[in-house]
Length: 181
Image 1 (cartoon, rainbow, N blue to C red):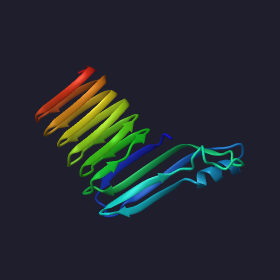
Image 2: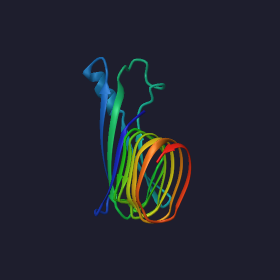
Image 3: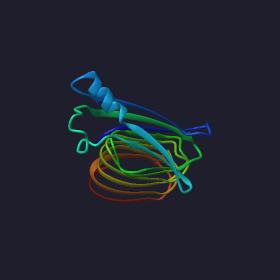
Image 4: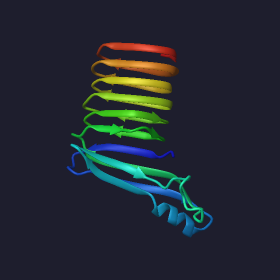
């Protein structure tokens, strides 16, 4: 299911998460029951913190329950000294002011701005904006957008799309097929 995720690095020492869900149903009670099933789970995994969205599955829902979640929006604020890893994500993804980021897969509008550490990003389909990162390893499929202010090394593997590059300071390694630069 598609959801919008915004992650912002802050000067605070704690992680905070806000979630908004839109649920639909044949009655207000059905919609509310579906919305109440959505949960954010925060847990320690080794030396990391994992933040997960738990939504009821459309396949496994109770046959008597007709409500469903149609949209979710999550905003995470975390200490800017932390590294971020995002497992495959569908929907809007906005990341700002983190210590480094690895996005295993993002499908949809994606923006990464102001990382102080290395950025690794796999992006498929949709607008893409990357700005002010020290180094970047990008795999882009059907991406369109801009990449600017990369201070160090930049490696890109692109297939189909349209990407504009500006202010790339370090060495550039490009492998592309059907990408308009």
